Length: 192
Image (cartoon, rainbow, N blue to C red):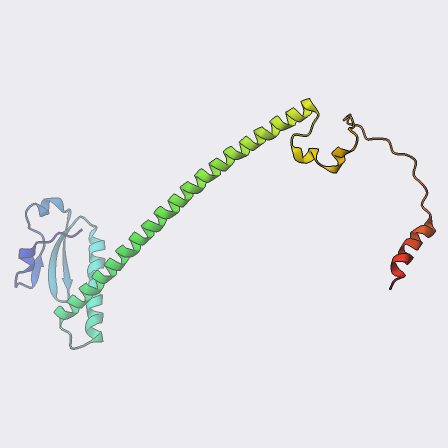
């Protein structure tokens, strides 16, 4: 941050010294002299000297570019337009930064909600697993299906069978008659 002293900036001298205000010399660690468009500026700053000089060079170049684009501009007018351009860029950058902060905040809130939803889903899954285990245990002890949909199925209307875990015996198979097999297809094709 650069320190400013309005009384010294208002002087008619071509050298504007910013340093020298009450307590400013003791607070700033760097005193830097810049020459921008023929005006010598004495600045006090806590920033690195090379950084301040690079900013001064950037301002010098922007004013020179402005004066080259319109030769009728005075140095003062070019400096004012350059200052307005930098101020506009600063405001737009601040708005963009605020927008990005808002987006990050919204993303963090969405992430938090998603995390809570995932934890709730995990709890529900554990509850369903526990319920499934208890129903299986009940089925094993009672030997009956746990819900009515299985009781109402057509297989349950037949005579009750004892669940033994063994497959029922199947009677001897009849030998297939090859001609009846062929006749089956001929009958279905006969109409065409």
